[in-house]
Length: 280
Length: 258
Image 1 (spheres, rainbow over the protein chains, first blue to last red):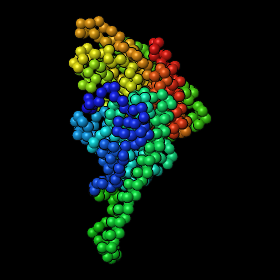
Image 2: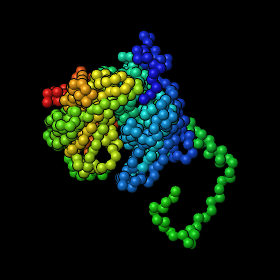
Image 3: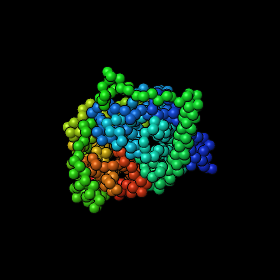
Image 4: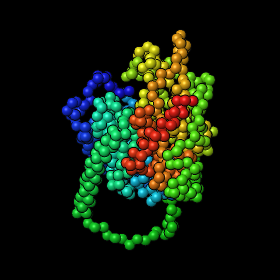
C-alpha cells in the first residue's frame, strides 16, 4: 500500500475556485516531457516525464517470436511488458510481475495490436518494454504514450501513434489526469487511449463511481488531452529525426564517399545462403 | 493457451448474420442468454453459487476467514478475487499458473464488486488494526461457451449474497455478509461494425473488441474494461453503457430473487 497517511481523509482535493492541490484546474494536464531515441541497444526507445512520473520504453523487433509455438504464421505479435521498478513507489514493490502489471501489460499489448501493421511481419514479435522508474499515478497512460514514441523510433510501420490519458472524479468534480493523492482519495479513475487520427478508442478502463453523463465529460477531457499529447509525441519524433539527419550530414562531410568495389562471391561460399541464418 | 481454431466459414457466417441483424443462436443484439443461478451449491463454502449463462457454466465459492487488515484500512475487511481456468472447462485452457486471461478475468470481477462497495467492509472488522474478516472469492470455470466475465461476475455476486460470516469461529453468532449494492457487469462484443451483448463462444472468437461495463442499481458506472485487439468509437461505448444499464436491470432481478 502507498504511503498516504500525510493526507487527512476529509481533505479537499479541489477548492471552491476549482483549483487542485497541485495548483491545476480541472482540465489541466501535468507537465509532460518526451524524448525519443534515448537507449543505444534498443531498436527504438523513449523517455517520458509526466508530472512526477518517470518512464522508459524500449522496443525490440520485429524479431523471431519466442516461444515458437506462439508464432502467428500470418502476422506479428505485439507483446508488451509493463514493469515497475521496486523503488518507483513509496513502499518497495517486490520485483517481477504481479497481477496488476500482468493486466496492464495485456491491455497495452491489445491497444497497440490494431495500429501496428502486423500483417507485414509474419512469425515475428514486436516486443515493447515499459519500465516505470518513478510512479505518481497514471503510469499506464505514461507508459503507453512513451511506448508509442518508441515504436515509431524503431521504425515499426503504424497506422498512427497512440495517445493516452486518464480522467477521473475528485471532490465531486470530473477532472483530467489525476495525480497520486487524487487517485487515492478521488471517486473514480478512467484511463483511456485513442488513435488520434481516427478517434478510435483502443484502451479503456474505469473504476470508481461515475454517472453516464460524468463519463461523457471525462472522455471529452481525456480526448482533448490526448490530442495535446499527440503533438508532444510528434514533436519528440521530429527532434529525434532532425538529430539523426544532422549526425548523418556531419558523417558525410567527414568521410570521403566510399569506393564501390566490384562485388565477387568468394569461391568457398555457397551461392544461396539458407534463408534462416541466425544473424545475431 | 492452445491456438484457437475457428473456420473461415464460421467467421464469415457469423459476420454475415450480424450484418443482417441476426445472431447464430437467434438472439437479438441486446438480448443476453438465459441466466440460471443456484445459490448455496457448496456446503463447505461460506457462500457459493453455480451460474449458467446459456451453456457457459461457472462455479464461484466464497470463503471467509480471519486475517489482518491492510495498514491503510485498519477497520475494514479484505476482499480477494482469483479465477482458475481449468482444462476441464475448455480445450483451450491449460493447467499451470494463472494466465493473463485468468488474471484479467479475476481483476475485472473484483473491480466491479470492490468499486461499487457491494459489501460493507466496515462491518467485517473484528479488532481494528489486528483482526478482520477476509473474503476470498474463487471463480472456477466449468464449461466455457463464451463471456466468462459476466458469468463469473454474476456467480461472485450470487455467492456473496448468500454468504454467512462464520463468527461462531470466534465465539459469536454467524451473520449474513452485509451486502449493500448489486453491481451487474454486462459485456458486449464488436463483430464487424455491430455490437452484440453477452457473446457466445463463436461470437467471442471472431470479435474484434470487447467491452465490459458494470453498473449499479442506480444505473451508475462502477467499472469498465475494454479488451481484445480492436477498437470502439465513443458512440459505441455510450451505447454499451446504455445496454449495460438496461440489460443489467433484468439480470439483477434474477440474482436478487434466486
